[in-house]
Amino acid sequence: MSDSNAELVRRALDRFNESGAPAWDLYAPDLIFTTRGDLERTSSFHGHEGFSQALERFHEVWGPIRFEVVEIVGNDPLVALLRIDLQGRESGVPISVIEAWSVWFRDGKMSRIEQHATKPEALKAAGLQ
View 1 (cartoon, rainbow, N blue to C red):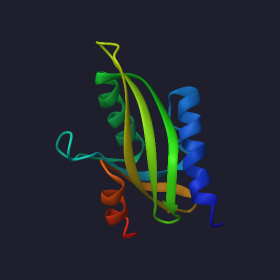
View 2 (tube, one colour):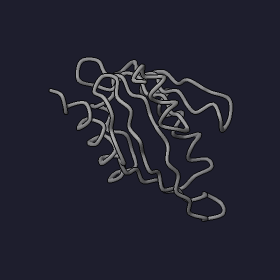
View 3 (tube, one colour):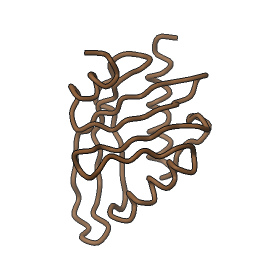
């Protein structure tokens, strides 16, 4: 089972890349999703409905989005270093950012996700550093 959580994250991001929507069966119903505090005030969203609201807010500013896993450290929790390719909704300008997510699991599903600007921040939050 050592690689199963990393594989779950990869599957979730692959399915998002394919459909533009979360693979809800891979997220706990009581998921807690916390945004980065360096871009705006930190916000936490609860459950599938909250995660949907976070995505709606995101899509108010950004158009198409694509995730690529750069590295995964740990298992539960784990830190996923991600390359995120975005496009401004109004400007159409493409950008690419690297972001680190701390991810916790319960019963084979992601139960908590925290966005961080850097890998060291995410490792510290996950207790892996």
